[in-house]
Length: 60
Image 1 (cartoon, rainbow, N blue to C red):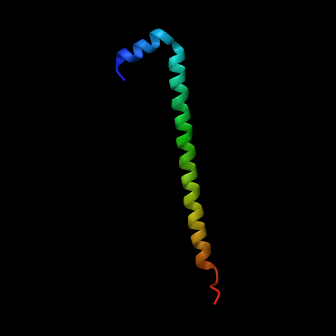
Image 2: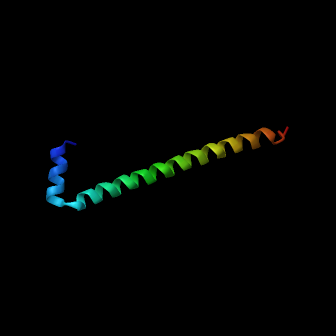
Image 3: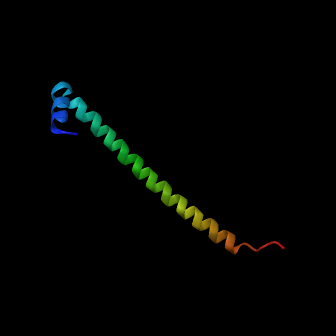
């Protein structure tokens, strides 16, 4: 976005425009952190499942 767009937003809407962008940015950060935690949890669950499958006796 160019500087004129930011200037126009601030002139017309004042701090409300900045607040909206800030809240959207924080929401994006929160979602990224949650996504990363879920990915790590999934990786750990896959590794645990693999270990359990390897150690179980095979029926025959």
